Image 1 (cartoon, rainbow, N blue to C red):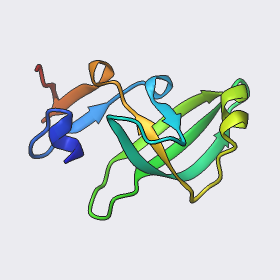
Image 2: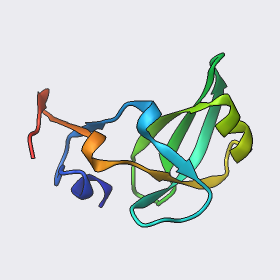
Image 3: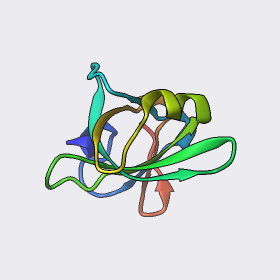
Image 4: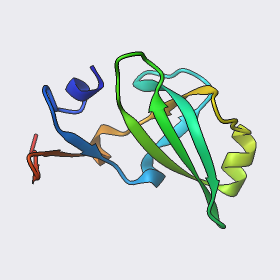
Amino acid sequence: EEGQRYGLETEGLCAIRPEKVCLTRLRRPGCINVQVKEIEFRGFFYRIFLETARIGSNLKLKADLPVHEAKRLNLRTGEQIYALIPEEEVLRFREGQVVRS
């Protein structure tokens, strides 16, 4: 279902810059339920590795959060949160080519 939402009805790859992914603890319209797989401190920001929490889905994401935002969210590996992915920021690829909407 996530693939259909982003214009990939069968197989393909979606890409988004990690700093464009918004993480929240509150469910909002358009959010995807994700699980925190890994948290990596990168100096000026934290890189958060995520996977969709729904069984049977294989959506993997990375989110970059400024240090103050990561501390505010107080994320822990293994917990479930929500990711908001602005559709206008998503690039779609199929067979090595960009898919135009």
